[in-house]
Amino acid sequence: MFYRIVNDQIQLHLTHPHQTEELFALTDRNREFLKQWLPWLDKVQGPEDSRHFLKEQLQKYAEGTLLTVLIYYEGKIAGVMGFHQIGQSNRTAEIGYWLGEEYNGRGIITACVRELIKIGQEYLKLQKIIIRCATDNARSRAVPLRLGFELEGTFRRAENLHGRWIDINVFGLLLEENSHEPSD
Ligand SMILES: CC(C)(COP(=O)(O)OP(=O)(O)OC[C@H]1O[C@@H](n2cnc3c(N)ncnc32)[C@H](O)[C@@H]1OP(=O)(O)O)[C@@H](O)C(=O)NCCC(=O)NCCS
Image (cartoon, rainbow, N blue to C red):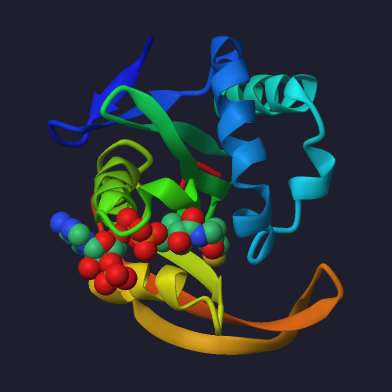
């Protein structure tokens, strides 16, 4: 399959239905961990939901609206990340990510976001990348801060996460402008 090497241990793979069982197993065993910060866990009840996600992401990649990849760590699926909401006209995109709890604390997401920034700049010709995190999601906030993003502001009560309101920090990274003009 099509993948990008991040380092000796990490690869980023385009989504494909053959990853269904492994992705569902990772999601299912990390359900409670991920639910602290992500809203969609209740929608993933069985492997068919993971299969639908993988196919949908691949289709949207073909349409140019997002780029979702599975993170492989030492040959196993460790998490998911990507650019969602790629804005063609203003060449801006947002990065989202998650890892299974057992893969936290190893620098995996920081290395992957660094690689995704390169892809965004070289391939998608982005001029700005955004990361949004809950203000009290310390692990997630640490990622953009480690990579030189700047805090641009806070949306108060931006999201209702399983019954509690959360405030969201918005971090931005301005990329070097290149010669490409907006496509529309
Ligand atoms: C957010 C999330 C991906 C962060 O994972 P993470 O493992 O903390 O982030 P990284 O993979 O970049 O690893 C950083 C950690 O590895 C350590 N580390 C080890 N080697 C490292 C290296 N080479 N480079 C950077 N950090 C390294 C760092 O010290 C840090 O650990 P610490 O927080 O104990 O100091 C993860 O906690 C998660 O999936 N949470 C649930 C879902 C979620 O919140 N998603 C984001 C929604 S906005």
